[in-house]
Length: 395
Image (tube, rainbow, N blue to C red; front, top):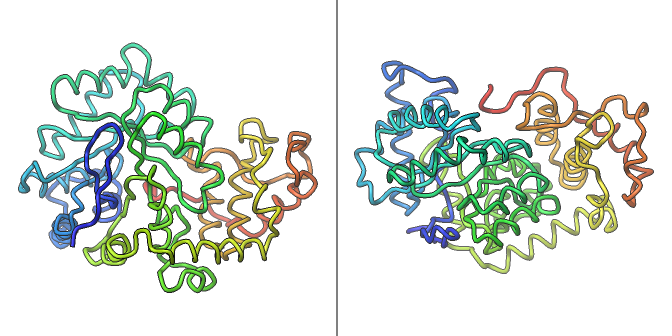
């Protein structure tokens, strides 16, 4: 049983709709000496890769920042026919082409490959990152050199940002594809990013639909019941892939059996009417909990965090509150809320502290201007945890 493929934008590559994401099966988050790799852990990683290939999932995605992931992949990928593989790695924004190329050589030495199919600039999360990458002697000049040498086929970028950054980055025309966050609980805020990529005929790679899509591997009972006969992870996969603009979903497997739930969904239920029926149940549940007007218009007129009082990330906090109140995503909301202000540009803006001391005249374009300060205070009370949160890669 092979998973379906989709044309990955202007690359013309037939891309499997599921990608083997490389940030769950590696051994930790720090670079390691090869002698320190646990043989059983390496055996598990290799079993994940071979199971993926059996299923037609030949896109293997990793990053320089994923600890020993590249190195551990370098122990198995060279043993596989290179023509069977689509390999992607990612390198963070660097100030110069020389610095970028130095890191690229580290990645290639780890992967033990002569080229990668996809190379992403990792973490274009701020407007200034675009300028840094595009300047003369910057990251993009390095990638163009590598493309001429045949060591990189296609150039893309990954991002945790919203439309203010991602839409202009797509519109530069410099990139063949983008790794971004978009799924049901990000639809109202991030769909313009997908549209911008589609206008440029870019491949669209959806990051972490299981975890960042709501920690759906441990869903609340309410959401699980709404998604029957599918699981929440399956429904989220199918809902996302119902839009032809989305091409592949990153599945961070930790063991070979983790593929089963997703593969069953995309091989047997793509286009199934049940996906739309479940969506309507979920939307009704949200409207019953919060009102149809809130669900239609809550994002309207909200300031981007740099222009919000105290740089409070109003959009993100209201998003977390909405899906906690409507679907019971409390643990997810806590996890994401406590990253605010603790993960640099990967999760920017601040928590909703000292709300009463702020001037909220910036909300004048919102139909809920009078309610939002109270909701922000409630969200802080519900979600704040008395310890510093860290991104997974910083844990």
